[in-house]
Amino acid sequence: MNPVVRKAIRRVGIDDSWKSRAVYRAYEFLFHHENWKKNQQMREFYSNLVQSVPMQDWNLEKTVIFDIGANKGDTTEYFRHASEEVISLEPDHRLASQLRNRFKPVESVTVVEAAVNHQNGYSILYLNPEFPAYNTLNGKWRDILQSSSKHQFNQSYIVETFSLDHLIQIYGRPVYIKLDIEGAELSALKGLTHAIPYLSFECNLPHFREETLHMMQMLKLLSPEVEYMYSTSEGFRKNLSRWIPSDEMEDFVKRTSYSFLEIMARMHRQDSQPITPRLRMHKTPEVVLS
Image (cartoon, rainbow, N blue to C red; front, side, top):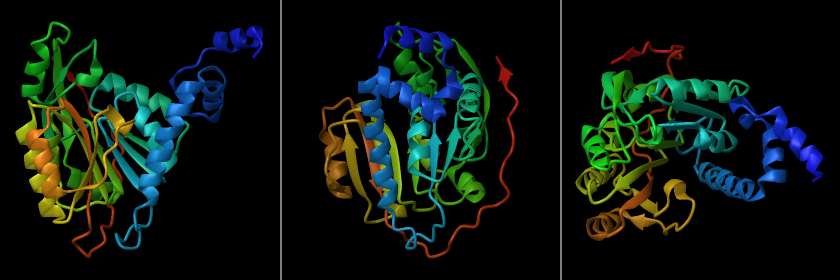
């Protein structure tokens, strides 16, 4: 590429909204080809995941993904290429604003400024301004991270919360739920009473070993034949395991020395009734600063 052309393109500038346009992928392909290749691999990974769902068996008419803890929207970007609709939840009002700007040209993405908890209500969001990916509802995770001088949670405010069941009633049963909510995964899962095809969550060890095992027991109640796949890298980017039976996976979690796992659960349908979505939410909750 001619250096003059490259300089001209960079001078134009690319804001968040450009990242959801095809021209940005062309720009990435030309000037950041390794990043483009990695992102393409992730788009294909999630597309294959969604395409493996037997839609008729689950009484699903469309493919919907819940991106819970969307942060800046990189996974939402993958998901929108893999499914017909993405519900992208982010409680940090600054990040939610970025998400709305990034995906304003994309009709298939709905941004909800809220968190997920065991029930509808309100909760305290602890913020790490320097590392917003570590924002959490979980005081235990805040204290663990704050023990390092690198992580300081010196801001907090009240955010609205919804249960997963409530989101399913509004948007329909998803083919996949991604939980990336920094230690609050167990609380979120307590608000789910429907089996779904796929659900993933992070596991920080050894701090959340018991919580992870508790989650696996809860998933077994939703789907007795649940299976698991895990990765030792965030976002299933590499080091993927085979599909593992529930009991074997629980034993692995009990004894592993890994400090981090990204775990994917594959469930089998137990109920026979389709879920009819209710009227959609169109709201931006007010933010109360502390």
